[in-house]
Image (tube, rainbow, N blue to C red; front, top):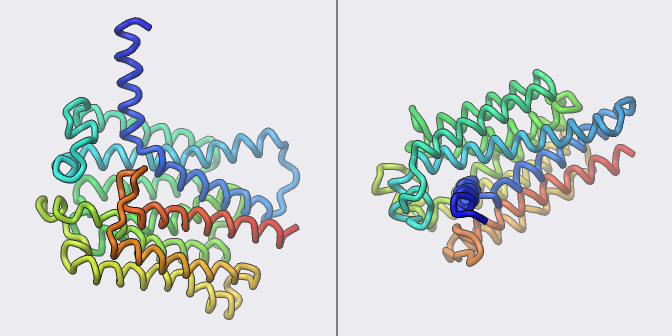
Length: 304
């Protein structure tokens, strides 16, 4: 390979690291699971297999693009914090500029929007709403700075809106089932998003960003996070009791036991050796995967 070719490959690799590929698994797995569940629940049988697969791929990949755009934008605006807590990232190291990251982020946002248009207009509206939250999280008014609002700005679009947007691909997103599951997802992420702030507490404090961890301390932050994560899955019980959710989703309430494990990992600041964040953050994402996948499987088998 020529010298110029090696430079291009290296640059592409650096851009890939900005995307943080592991975090892209969440939107792909969650959206694909919910989209398939909506397809089976809606009992759509007159669409060709090729069309179904193209729609599924386009919609799920759209969420991945959107999440990637958010990751890149966040690093473009958070380079001061990263210089303190994650100096190994490309921008603090000076091998990628903030301007390049902004341009890459813009490219992915536009790509997500154009791809969403190939699905349908309702889905596109959900994508635009999610993009609004992710952009305003990092840029003016930079909601990331504000205590509690920063958690809401992550949990609402990635939990509630993402579930409804995924369900809208083949079904009605305003039915009780997706609305109820969306509420559970949002509550879980409202608590779970605290896990990403554990290792960044001092860096966030230095630049004026207020999080539960650097305002109230790790113990209170972990208890607060635990209450919402457990409460999210326990919410399934009254939703089933009042027939908002079907009885078959009741077993999902047992995921509250995993929430306890996440809280324990938070308190011990257990660092994941394979990823740049805590083990609590990794298990939180895994629990969300499991929640979405299990919901899809339950919905599919109960609809057959």
